Image 1 (cartoon, rainbow, N blue to C red):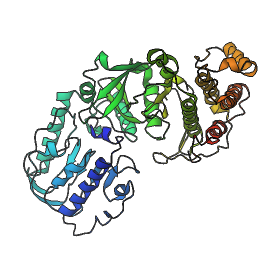
Image 2: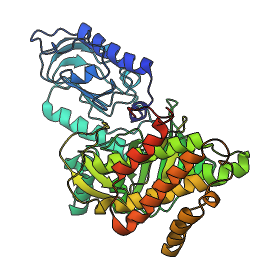
Image 3: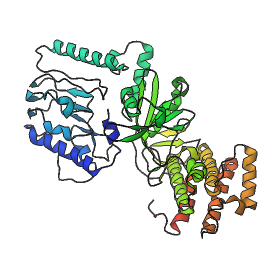
Image 4: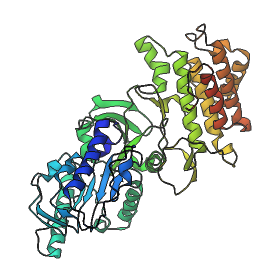
Length: 482
């Protein structure tokens, strides 16, 4: 399902092709019952096609079509060939209409990434073969030329089983699952699919050159991170988990959190894979690596360090992301492990918080996937979140000093003492004398307050964000609306 990968590759061209796709479908089909009346193309706002009848988008605010469900609508005409322009399409259901003519013999080329195709109960004919091996499919392709419904079901089952045997898929249709353990796994996969769509193991192997060690870009407690180039040119990062039994909770937690929450300062989780007892998490690729690398590794390699302006902007972004995790009204999360290693940097050095496997879900609602940035002040105590406030204080010190974080409580007490008594020695020497000393001292004061909150729990992450944001606003480095 390579279409998953396109949903975050922001491109006006790609969005326009999806709009053109739906327009061509409406123009090529007769709609005697006017059930497609909501398909109004005069609206030009982003995501407007997601409100169309029968159209499901990857995200409500992005004009990228995931599925089209137009069954039993009395539609007339031939197979809409313009549908090839829906470049992110995963499923198509045109069953129960009055379509006529031939199913295109090259339907696999017209719909290269579709995993579910239902053309049953029409007047179509033809045999659609040649499904690409680059996309592992569980195909529900029903040949309408077969006269008996039972024969159709038989051919459907045979096609599905053949495809699963060829590519060693774990069956993901409930009727194909046998046994209690498999039913449990099936329910988990179904639950995960509410948030994001799965990729196949074969696609991951192709994108990483069979997990070639040359494509390894990171090592972590949970597994190895690979750079992955997919056939449509999208570059992603694939985390291959070690001994998946040991990371059952972490794997599920990442999907539940990052699959549901979207924010400028959270790393985008694109997909996952769970096949042959192997687990993978697929993220948007961050070309500038981790904040840890820029503070401690890259300066030695590249001979240059981050300036204060960039460090402050990164600190504000991290604070914004943590505050939103604590104060949004959809799914409140305590990260618990914030560090420079789990802060990724995109091509514009915008920080993205990652590694949610050990996070704590403190409030959840039934609301839809959220990408908003509104803060809601909770009525509950800040105590459940104070670990993040403390962790951010340590990270802020790391950003200011360029020194690695302390590892023991004794080190932390010493750090607090040094911040209070020896401010100058706590600042990375490359930052001093550049005209930002007052800002740096004020940021150190904020770091000190965060670290002390580990003992009294009096400061919330929203207060911290507002304080550090004010430093950037004071010299127009950060916009008021950010």
